[in-house]
Amino acid sequence: MPPFKFQARQDTGWGLIYRLNNIMAKIETDIENGDMIRWNLHLDRIFVNIIYKNPEEKVRDAKGKIIDVNLSKEDTDIFSALNKQIEDEKKNMVLAKQNDDNVKLVEAKNKLYGLLLKKDIWIRKKMFQLKLYLREGESDPRKAIYGG
Image (cartoon, rainbow, N blue to C red; front, side):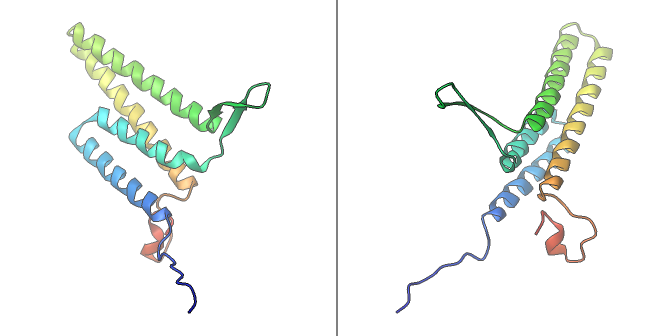
């Protein structure tokens, strides 16, 4: 009798798609609720889930032993720059609250919202580039979502 061969009907990419879809749903809820802290957290989780597709750079010492790993420099530089700007605006919000300056608080909140929106759009562009986001002009709806 031939050995039993099991072949999954779906590949492991479906798990990633499911995870990303769940996180995206949380982001929509965060935005609707005005929860910018959770919105930022969920954007970070998407970044973590998609960055694996880009090659890493192993950092070795003089003897060839791996001592560190660098992720895609361009992606991590953009991600870090956006996060620094976000943290700066969060600090501005705290200072405005401490000084009871509602004008500066509203200004900082608006800037924070704009930065999160920029980060959100950048993450979605990365997902699209990695074929993990919606495709345009697809006649089969099964293929239109997340590269199906």
